[in-house]
Image (tube, rainbow, N blue to C red; front, side, top):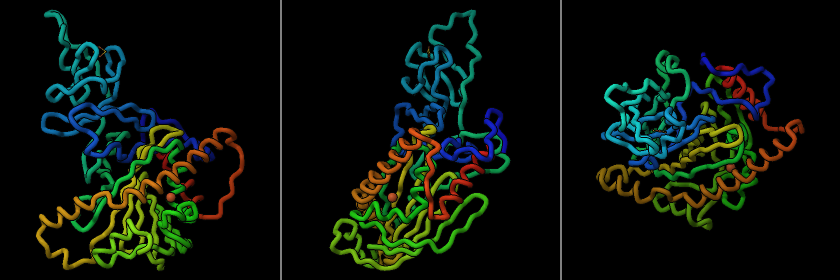
Length: 355
Ligand code: FES
Ligand SMILES: [Fe+2]
């Protein structure tokens, strides 16, 4: 892959300083977060403003007014354009200046141009491509998507991860299922044992055998999410996959989990953890009217919130400590027993080299 401004990354680069490969789609916001006002995000050191035009279609521009370098996200939407708060210059979705309120008759619109980004809305999230647009077109790269998001048989819960650490710490946390120890009080999973590891060009799959506390085989068993006394440990396969730059997991037939990454900068990562409880097994439910099933899906949205937020808080605390220790002394040796982690680090370096 090719990008005109990207640095060359030597093979032995410390994984904690590796940049992202920008030639992928990143999940930068939930759809519901971007309403009528401009919305600012940062993706790998780049300040970007998202806004919706009159039809509600999402656009993304560099968050910088070329006139005096203030943030366009402090402005407002005017028709299909973005209007700067300071002097009211407007910019279209391509980043060209379209209007200056005090332009004299003999003056032309300034020829300034700010960067616009490919952006789209899919499965409840806003996906942005910060890389080389030619590569995007040539390879028809698509966002990973979350197919269960609108599916009537899946109940979603979303937890936002705001993590003061390099993205490598977060993906290592998600790929190393031996850290169930940390979450004992939330009873997420137990006794994970790595069975197999598969590495392909754009993904790593780690297959564990684990114990699950939950069995969703009757409709009322969803209440196990709220009442620990109803949970029973039983063996289930636990698969975790790094599908660059995102993560996906399945625990038996009952749960699917995604983590969509938005690395903010080298010591801060934002991500969206999406947990789905499956209703696939309830064939009687599938015969009910779609309206009712939609109502059930919407009413149960967020049913795993407490567990998910609790797990995230525990993980974030560990990652914050790892990052702080790294910043204190980056050459201190760490010890690793899970072969998945070495593969993940190699993969991150390779992706960084691809830029
Ligand atoms: S700084 Fe944006 S219009 Fe002047
Ligand atoms: Fe965790």
